[in-house]
Amino acid sequence: MTDVLLKPAPASALRRPRVGFLGVGWIGRHRMAAMLDGGRIEAVALADPNPDMAREALGLAPGAAACADLDDLLAQGLDGLVIATPSALHAEQAQRALDAGVAVFCQKPLGRNEAETQAAIAAAKRADRLLAVDLSYRHTAAVQALKAQIGTGALGRVHAVDLTFHNAYGPDKPWFYDAALSGGGCVMDLGVHLVDLCLWLLDEEVAGVEAHLLRQGRPLKARSEAEDYAVATLVLGSGVVVRLACSWRLPAGQDAVIEAAFYGHGGGAAMRNVGGSFYDFEATAFEGVTPRRLTSPPDDWGGRAAQAWAQALAEGGRYDPAVEDLLRVARTLDRIYAAAT
Image 1: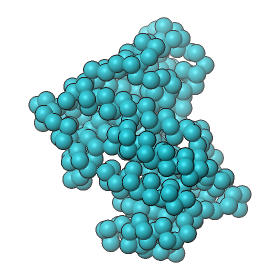
Image 2 (image 1 turned 45 degrees about the vertical axis):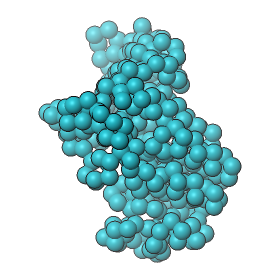
Image 3 (image 1 turned 180 degrees about the horizontal axis):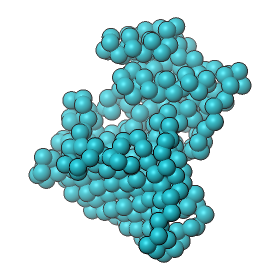
């Protein structure tokens, strides 16, 4: 499945697969709208336990069937399923769909740990069906600019990475704060994006981890707790040192602080959010003390991962081995939690 920025394709250019949507809260509806806007799929069914959410989603796809649950959705003759439910359900729901021959696009994380992630990927491989996860920051113009800088060798040999994601508000749903349901706290919610970007851009494995996790200012006592502050040092196989920090409700003076910065002996490059925004990013290259702007807002990136999956589904929807990159991300998150608790 492509990781480059997509251009809209006419609906007539591709077959329009039948897609169902499991969970149509804000994120599920946003991804539905992005796929429909791309003209690559037909939204034929949806399910959500909240009737108000289901009603709003039907406004986007008036002809879709309102289903009771996953079983009902899978009875609709789907080609693909979009999953936007609590994290504890992702791996099992993805496996059930894939075992039924239905391709899957899932919100992160695919699994709460490496074992769940591996099980879902194995189901996709057995079924030879497309499986992808909504790691949407890969598709920002800013990250694509970083990818070009690193890929062309403009930074030289990268030796240091700084990764930051502070969300001044934190999630608005109670299940995020129950580690049994969410898989973890801010590391699972925010850190997953940072770890994915680092390992994807550098194509590396993690060799060593040191981590500290806090909940309300105190060290995490048990894996069953959800952390609201995390700091970790990752050492990659080549010796690259990565500093990762993420949090919920940190008083950072703005809505969010988001950064991924890469430094080599030949220069540096970073993507950073603008003015505390969750959505506006710029990319900058550094040559000594001189910055050079690479990209600036606006950039309508939020639905690109969803549209890329929809395009790949329309083009056949076969298994894509690129999903196996998620195993090293899940393995790294497991190691962060193990190191801290």
